[in-house]
Length: 292
Image 1 (cartoon, rainbow, N blue to C red):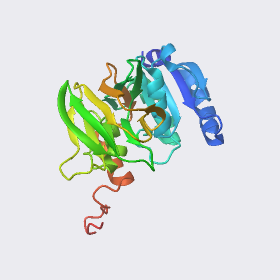
Image 2: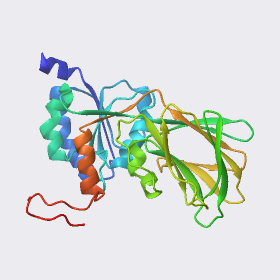
Image 3: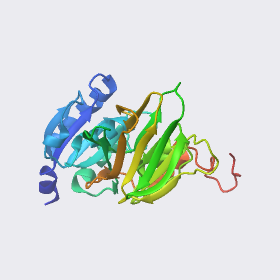
């Protein structure tokens, strides 16, 4: 019965075909998958519109950035993601290739940990009324150009005015993105499955402004009040749109969630210690002292 169920899984492989190591890894996975599941696509140019395909599992060969792009491409058609790490940090790409090969049966049978996280839906409203909608898995960041002046921005939550900031920018982060750009702006670390968002001003020109966490069901509106400089909004650090005075960005919770396989609480805190050096390094031997 288990084998029959595994064969019903519809799988897409997703990776950068320009990388020899990625293509070598995909070549090892393909014959195994054909025995155990229905392999729908091997996408090596990352141009496939994943929102138009019905499938159950995406195996991503790359780094965290590649996963972010794949999740946005899926849109409302969110399938579970297993990430094989060919990047640097690998917070989301939780498997190395040998681990994926060893765990493939368990992944297809649903016997691995499953983490579901908030995705942002950001609506860009131009001063003339035109609207465009974007998704973000990590964060939506409104910021000035490197050599520009500070920008005045107004923040409202659920229609209630919060404050007007003189800042270099504002980050609205998901829990998954709380260990990315938001962390560098002094934002808190959130567990990935928390139903919340972080609002973190970038270099505010006052000591009174601090990052804050709000429930994910809030509507977060940021309006550019005055920008005598270059300014734009970036989604996951990958998609950029220029902004001007009077433009607004409204961030809400997307109805669908990002599903990551092989994550979970233990993996999250392990990654904080090993990849972000959380709390310094603790030796395994009880007789070794803590060292920073």
